[in-house]
Length: 463
Image 1 (cartoon, one colour):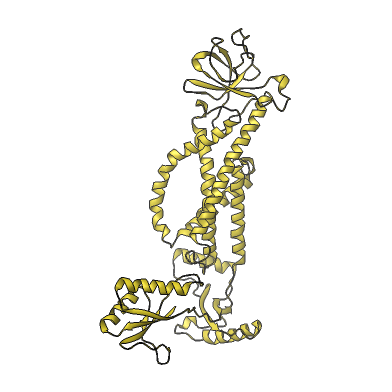
Image 2 (cartoon, rainbow, N blue to C red):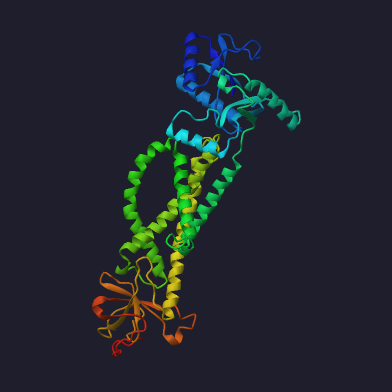
């Protein structure tokens, strides 16, 4: 912003104005001859200030003047703004050319890598791009002519340098335009799509598709995804201010996962049991709950880090991309990752509810229920102590096997499967739930659904 100020013509006012502009990192100077037509009042003089701010183009002039007026009022200066004009940075069209070592064979690439790792100092001094120049051009002429003219100028500039080893030698170097790593960018995009697909399948519980213990393809996909996310996240945070906070964040985050994992696992188990209309009992404790919690946590963490990892790979394959100044900054990546992480975490809960509904339908058909993340169904026969024994839901029948997932305190929740004659009825095949106190019933554990319960007494017949 080009601002013309009128300042009281006194040395102390000029010094204070200079100090004020220095604190704002704004250059201040006297106007050049013929630079402005503004005439100062008697006893006043003019100063030119370059007010450099980051603002939206619409309203930038007003913001610069308001900022300056506020600073002048705080410093109690006798300064007035007479003129302010928007100044934009000048971009000259330049064409970039690279001085690059001549292409080498595979054996030379391997020898170069060995020398770099062993630090022998005998590596190829012309490997990769060793110099670049940018040639000013005009946009009026056609593109092919513009490139040809700039290439001739670049050859002339590259032929001389203070370093003899960096002068263009036709036998050692080639001159070419900047290389776009299209193949690497496609590979990073493939990794992004593959990793997100794996997270999506994991949230759906499709373990058989990429099971590490059964399929070689599944092992390769899991290893590829893990390497893509971990290495990409490291590439994203390196050489940034964030890497200084990582050694402090990880020791604080890991203890939080200790209570978080069981809580997440209990949420998965509870959603599963909603299909049966019962609460989480003692059969849901143990390793299965931790596994269910890790399922949710890994899906959320992997999806959260996935955009960050992609940003790291983009920074790696494009040396000109800076995460601090490009559109792919931390805020959008974290927002996208957190949104997708929450969405897939909710999908995990939806998957658990769907699995619970499928298990309820299987139990209604008389099938034995498999264990689900530590949730183990017990088959019991119940006989109430008396006809006046209290219960919640329906009265538990004593003539057939009931299903429970363990007691909770002094109560036990039961799922009453439908009778075989009603199992084919879609409206009644979901069964019903019941809850009783442990002291009000005689509970006998049986091996499976096909077991026979003792004959019901008159006080325990279902209504």
